[in-house]
Image (cartoon, rainbow, N blue to C red; front, side, top):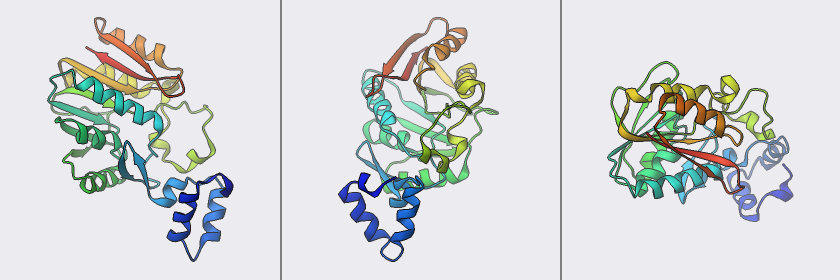
Length: 240
């Protein structure tokens, strides 16, 4: 990254954070190291979310997912929700700040959960975090809503240069990126209440493949695919 591409406010902040070794920071940026990790946090849906190399950096696309989810939940009488593959906790925290739901959140990474717990505390929200490998186990209670931004990048798919510094466990998935969707959908009846909803962030080319999986397990479900700010398929709402 060229320093000329960094906003004046961010550049000023970096110089304040690293007054004695800014030359090293400049070199990191040239090597495409994420500026968000250097600053230590991002503004996500008007919420401060701490980030480091243990968590994926929240994207604008996920802000759209949160916004659409909040609008959707206003028309439901749901009481509980679980955020699977929570990472930094940005989804769970944002939803908790804008709804009255009881929210649980899980992740396979204890390091990610540590960041998520700090973020929840700093944002003054109460979320029950716990460690879970969703590919092997399922939650032991039921929820009205499941939401997840799981790993969905194909292993041979192009990604921007800075992603090499993000945790690969949060990015890549087997089965052409569909591994987590299939697992969550196929086991959802174990922890989703009747007439519940599953909400996913999805890859731009994955909608139809995921829809086929959904119809296999929930043939009578109502499926709504939403676009992101760039008009790509980015979210799927599955009313079971």
